Image (cartoon, rainbow, N blue to C red):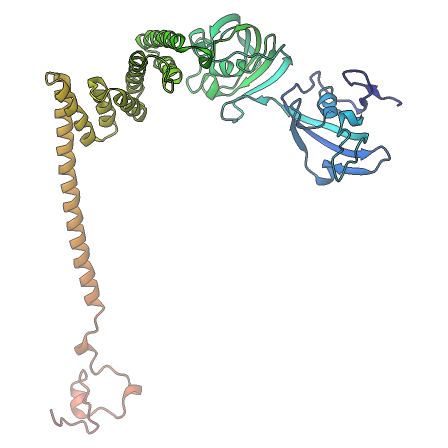
Length: 453
C-alpha cells in the first residue's frame, strides 16, 4: 500500500501504518501508560463500525496490557502526542478467526484512524491515587522483580522543578530505603521494575518528602518530585513460604534484632516494620517449635505496642498489647502498655483494671502504683464533672419548666377584662343606664335589669 509502513514485529504486514498528521516532541507512550485517543474504525471498503469522534468522547486504555487489540498496542506505541495515523490491521493482529460478533466478522482486516491526544504514567501507588506514576524509558529484561526486603542496586536522578537535587548510585534493602535517603515512592515503584529497567517516576508528596520537605536536598513541604531510576541489579529476599520451620525461626530472630536496633535509634516506623514481619512469618505457622514461635511473637507484639505508644498511635498500641495477652495472659508488660494506651484514649476505668492486674502480678511495681493513683484521680474528677453537669441540667430544666408555665399563663384569657367588651354589632340592644355607668359589665337579660341573680 502506498505510504504505509510495516510496523509489525515480525514484518509480516500484520500492522501497516500511514501518518496523516505529524505529532510533536520526541516521546512515544511507553508500556503501562494510560493513553487517551480519538479513533474511527472502518472495514476496508470504508464502512464505519465504530467511532469515538461520533460519541464526542475520547477513549482511554492501558498500553501494552492487552486491553485492546494487538495492533493498537503495537501501533500506538510508535506515535507521538498529537500524531494522527491510519493503522491497517490483519486478522491476526485484530480479532482473529473468531471476529467480534455481531460487529466484526471472522478473519476481517480492519482499518483505524487514530489520533493520540495525550498519555500519563502507569499508576503504581498502593491506593491507586496517582501518587506514583511511571513512564518507562527502557524496558527491563526477564520476568523477576524485587520483593520486600530484596537488596537492590539502583542509579537515581532526582529533580524538582527541572533542577537536579540528587544523583547517585545506591544499594539498599527494600523497606529500609529511608536509611539512604530513598523516598517511599522509589521503594514501592522498584518492586515493579525488571532488571535493567529505566523509568521516569513522578512522585507526589505523600510518597516523597511529605509536609516536612527535605533539608538535605532543599525540597520544600508538599513538593511533587521526579526521579529517573535505573534498576541495575537485585537479589530477591527468599519468600517466607519457601522457608522451612527452622529457617523461619532464624529469619525472625534477625527481624527482631533489626527491629530492636531501629528502636534504639528511635526510628520507630522502621522498628515496627521488622517486628511486624515476625507476625507475618509466624502468626499462622503451626510447624515451628511452639515455645520459640510464641516467644518471638510475644516479643513482636510487646515491642510493636511500645513503638506505637512512642508514636502516639494508641489504638494500635492497645491492640498489639491485647495480642500479646492472647499468648501470655499474665504478662505484666502487656497489661502495663495496654493500660497506658487506654489512659491516653481517655478510658481510665479500663486502664485502672489493667494496672490493677499488673499489681496482682507484681505488687512492688511502684510505677504502676503511680499510674493507678493517677487513674483514680481522673475518675474522681470525671465523677465530679458529671455531677456538675447533671446539676446544671436539672437547674436548666427546672428553669425551662417555670418559663414554660409562665408563658402558658399569658395565653389564658382574662375573663373579667373581656366581659362587656363586645362591639356594637354583637349587641342585641342599646346598653342600659347601669351598663353605661359600668362599661365593663354587660347584663345578659334584655331589659337591662338584674333578675334572678
